[in-house]
Every structure is written in C-alpha cells, then in structure tokens.
Image (cartoon, rainbow, N blue to C red; front, side, top):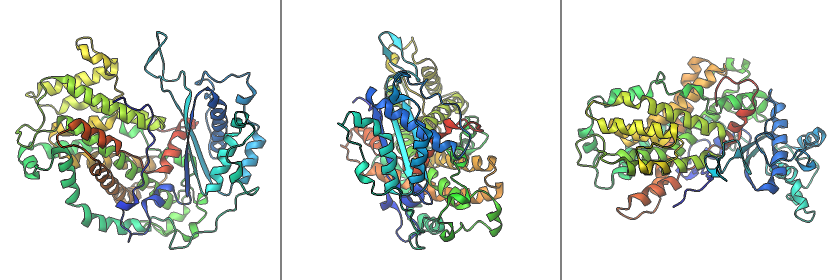
Length: 534
C-alpha cells in the first residue's frame, strides 16, 4: 500500500481518563483559556493567495508578541507571482480591524508542505523548499466565533472563484466577538486534577500496560518471565544510559515547542484571563506570583506536550521494536538478521508513515530526524563483538539516510527514509533486550525531561521547581499518553498471523493530542532570536 503523502491525526481520547479527576485531557491540552481548534488544508495553485494571506496574518499576530524574522515565505514558494494583486501584502489596517473584532487570544500557524521533496521532476531533483503548493494551517482560539472570523478573513480570495460568495461570512453575527465570562470553579481548566490523576493512574496501569505491550509485540502466548530470563545482565545499565541527559544525540537542542510558546507569551500571567479562578499546582508557592511565567500555563503545556509525544510515539516505537523483537522461545535478546532487505523495507515504510504525520510541523519533523540520526551514530557503542550482523544493520541504515542509496545492495535504491527517531529507538531497544513498555517509557520520559530542561534554560522556572514540574505534570502526561497509545493500538482489527497488517493497524492508531503544541510549535521558525534549534 502506498503511504499517504500527508496525515493529520488528532485524538484526545478522553475515555481513557478518570472521570473523578479535576480536568479532562482535552481541557488541559487546549490551554488555559482556549476552547476551539481548526485545521485548514490548502492545496493547488488557486490556494496560494489564501496561503499568502494566512502567512501575513500569522506574522502579524506573532509580531505583536515577539520579534520575528524577515519574511521568506514568498521566496520559498515559487508559485507566488509578485505582480498578482491577490498575493501582495495585506493592508495592516485590515488585519488590525480583524484583531480588534476578536474576543480572545488566537494562535495561527502555517506550514509549507513540499509533497514532491526528494523526488525527480522532469529529470531534476526537487529540493525541500521548492514546488510547494500545499500548506497546513492550524488555528487555536478561545471561541468558535473567533475561528470563523479568522477563516472568513483568510478565505476571502476564494470569493472570486465562488461567484462572490464569502466562506464563513454567514457565521459572523456581530462586529466583535463577545468575550466570555470567567468559567466556574467546576468547569475551569486547571492543573488541580493532575495530582488526583497521579495516584489513580498508578493503581490502574502499574501492571496492565506491561501486559498490553507484551501482547501487542509478542502475541497472546508470551509470558513476561520469558523476556526476563533472556534479558542480558547489562540491560538495566544500558537502559540508564539511554535515559541519561549526557547521551550525545542532540536532544537538548530541541525545546518541544517551549521556546516558541514562551516567546508567543503563552506562559505570561497576563495571558490568563481566568486566573482569578485558577488553582495553582501543589508544588508552587505564593512567591511565584512575582515571576512573569504562569506556572499553571507552563504546567499545562508540559503535561499536554508529554502526553501527546507519548501517545504519538508509542505505536512507532513498538513497530520498530517488532522488527528486531525476539521470538518467545528465543535465547538471544534480538532477532538474528541473515538478510537486511526485509528489515529495511519495513523500517522504510514505518519511517515514511511517520514523516507523513510530521509534515505539518516543520520544527517537530526536523527534531525527529536530528535525533534519529543521532541515535544511529551511537548505536554501535551498544553492540557486543558477537553481534556483527547488528552492527552492519546500524551502519547500513545510517548510510542510507546520509546517501539515500548504497550501490552494493541492489534493492536499497528504493529506500529513501528520513531517519525519524521513534522507530529507530524501538529497534535499538529491542536489540538491547529492553521490554516493549520500558522502551516507550524511556523515550517519553526523555521528551518530557527535555521540555522541562528547556523551560529552565529559558529562565521560565528554577531548577528545583523544574524537578517538581517534571515529577508532577510530566509524569501524568507520559503515563496517560502511553495508556492512550497502547489502548488505541489494541483496538485495531487484525487477522491472526498477519504481521504486516498488524503493523499497519498500529500506525493507523497513531495520533497527537496537544492542539496548543501543534499550533504554536510551527511558529518557532518565525522567531528572530532563538536559543533552540526547534
């Protein structure tokens, strides 16, 4: 089956959440005050005037919050004609009038998607920044009416193609959106429920998730004692090394959107219109009110980003793990590889599917590829001398990513993986003898740790408070994300013994669940001053 070019998948999965806790995952993942989210897909030459209009508005909103870079949007999109009035810069007055008509805060981001990148067209290689006719727009707002106003403004060029009809104009009923009153204590979006969820989740998932992960990878006849008996003595030490912050894979060059959210003033106290009703996380003190960073907003973001990363990564990590997973009765901790072609083909398919899901988030996609290549570069350090075939596999995968093909393998020419981190991490974990669930936990913990570390390095929070934040919101987000990811994989229908269909169903269950991170992280590329790569 041909991998889709672009996949936009979001699943908040509130049904996997305890109803007795304070706030639903959807509430915390949308942000302190945001209640509406929309995705707009633009494709084809006729959509370019709309894309230019969205880009101008996105930069206008961003410039109100922080310093932004010079606009290179038109340079990277050769379909824009500078002589066309429809693609010229919008009058600032029109955008200012739109801003004044909004009833709350709006985050708007646009990502240019090159569907032909890496391919040949008319005998010439297409670069990542050429021939882009597709754009993905994400809008996060406090009300549906503000979403309608944004869509109406951006889609105005379409009226020329629709006989004068202006999309979404009929949804706007006043000159200004009425700002909502503060929500009640019973309905508020606070991190108050996080502590309650923490205790309940430990009771609910302590042993169940291990069984689910083992069943998914090894089948119904597998017993956890088999994996423990075949595990190497140094598994615990290698697991500690993989979670070590000193692991040289470049993870601390990425902030998981924290830097963009910070500069977009997502964490400012003034950003919280309902702060009078917000309950502070239990690890904060009254002295924290002197900081410009709202601990409630930062805690919500770390929770949402950790949950989304864990939920999205779990199917891909286990899909990679499955490629090198030992059979139930096998003594070796990894699958012997007499022929690399089948492994490489499966890895390539998994990698391409993940790339299709990350195309709408340029910074997140770059971070994934950077860390995937970093993992391959250190993979040989974890190999015993007796595991020569495994060493050859890692080297071949690294060369394929670097060179796109290896002449000594005739079937490798068709492999053009991007080298995303999730499946590579799963394959490495299987080769080391880690359990499936531990593999997912380790990666998800690393992402949550990196987000909190970014907040500390950006001076949003102190080191001691950062540890408490990681233990509180990070822990809950990772556990909920793992649970949602595993149960989503388990709900897929598959035929017994059909391994290929099983992997496909796993990948189809993958989804993000943090609208505010998905909307704000693409804005990172606009920032004039940046500490982090993404």
